[in-house]
Amino acid sequence: QIISTTESKIVEDHEPATRNCNNDLTASFETLAHTLPVEKHGLSMEDLNKLNKWDYALQLDLIEFCAEMLEDTVERNERRGKQCELRSFVGKTAPISPAQYVRRIRKHSQCSPCCLVVACIYLQRLKNRVSQTYLTTTTFQRLFAIAAMTASKYLDDHFSSNRRWADIAGLSLKELNALEVEFLFRLAFELNITR
View 1 (cartoon, rainbow, N blue to C red):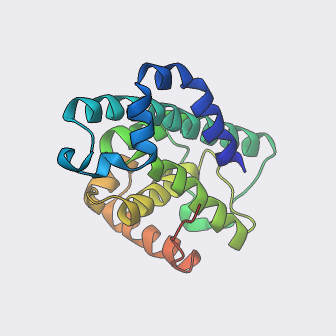
View 2 (cartoon, rainbow, N blue to C red):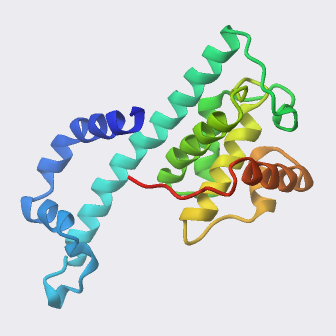
View 3 (tube, rainbow, N blue to C red):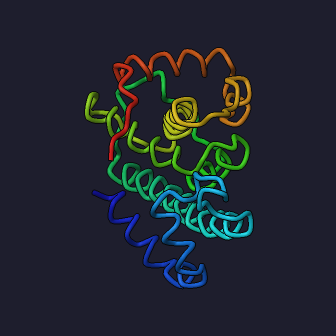
């Protein structure tokens, strides 16, 4: 429910950008013309470039939404004194804020912005399975990094290695590998997302 509300807000916020794209371009996107060669009524390179710029602007808002949502969730759980039952995901207090951490993951891992949203969905699934799962100042670093890495591996054609993810997350490779396995088993390997 949160995500569909956000999608609507993002589209509303970018209506001027949509108006700047010519109507044929927007209609072409809706009919999947961007997947066809030019000879078969597909988009020209110029139109594809315009479409990519428009799409990129929408993705920036998605990244910020995830950053703010993670920040708010951690702050709320800290105020309420929540403790996470998953002891292996508890560590030292992270040296950066949750919002900065989301931006760091996006910048250094090159995972697609949709992976950040899917990471949030995976964390909700984990919470549904283990009710005492909370994002706090001592857990968000491990939980969100593992969720984003899992989403990237599942969704993206090109993804970073575990060694790279360990560097990004500030964890040892051995710890990251162990957390990944635990995360997958706790989700029962249910990674598929439907609309």
